[in-house]
Length: 88
Image (cartoon, rainbow, N blue to C red; front, side, top):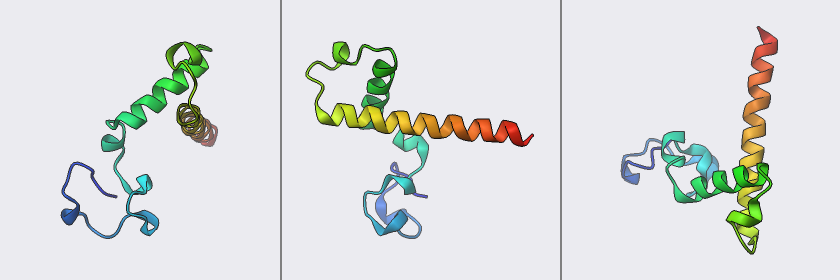
């Protein structure tokens, strides 16, 4: 795992899947501080509250895609938590 706060030359190993900008290999603490991730969360939350077009007029494709990605991430997290509860 890599830290976006550290200089790239100090990273150990190579980024996940060999892709230079693949976010799967970065620590979550760095990722959640990125503006695109925060906007994706805001878009997802607005979509859940049924006011996406109010906060993001025009509904550009990247906003919808960010909302979908955030929704998938939250759903995966919730499913994992449910699975863990069932295993207890």
